[in-house]
Image 1 (cartoon, helix red, strand yellow):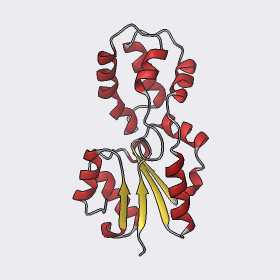
Image 2 (cartoon, rainbow, N blue to C red; image 1 turned 90 degrees about the vertical axis):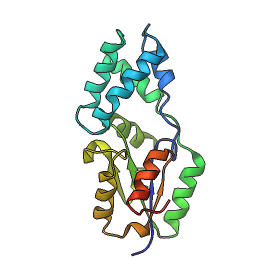
Image 3 (cartoon, rainbow, N blue to C red; image 1 turned 135 degrees about the vertical axis):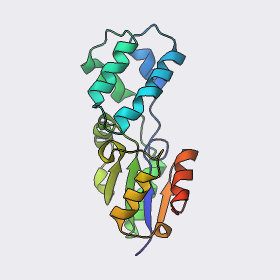
Image 4 (cartoon, rainbow, N blue to C red; image 1 turned 60 degrees about the horizontal axis):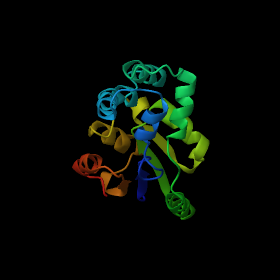
Length: 178
């Protein structure tokens, strides 16, 4: 089988989520450090699909003592999702134009994917592997085994692009090229 190319989303194809902007716009008086700690403690549940995006955002709003509605919070969330990197989109298009297969493997919540579809033609990907649908994240080698199995190829044929050291390390453990 020919080589395939697998890309992460945040920090690779688009700007990372702007948590500080989100924090500043939802109307809270708690300290950012406390907010971020709570966010980090709860995000995995949403990224693994254990809770819905609404449940996640409601947790955040309740903890932050925000009176912002869920609808307004979703709007603010969308404004914080980050723009696409033009160069990355051009690279994806170039790889695709050479007849190569490209895939998305990302730790995303449903809300992230909903906003992504508004910014990017997701049909550029041959398939999409999202943590909230698979029930595991790139923090665990299990997601890479799922990817390898579904692609039906050797890890030696997979090139993986990610911006986080721990994700790269887990891919490397599974024999995936970086």
